[in-house]
Length: 90
Image (tube, rainbow, N blue to C red):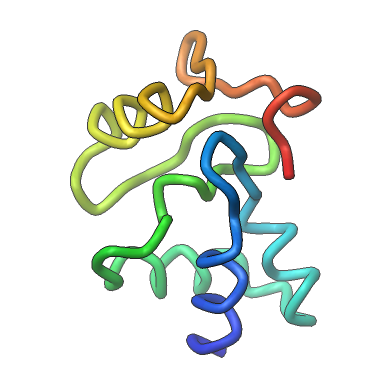
């Protein structure tokens, strides 16, 4: 499962996000929390580009503020901890 998750996350383009749920759908799993745990352990991946299905930024192993900072640096607009799904969803 880890390899499948990493493969998808590596393909998320700069300035776009994908949800834990969508990743689960792409790999045929409903283990969205497991996906979050897998990403929490990874280093150097585009983990900051993975958010909750409702648009909330979710957690990040280097802190939510750092996640927001990375997203904004890539041009993703974050307002009140949420991302506009229609504009930035991959």
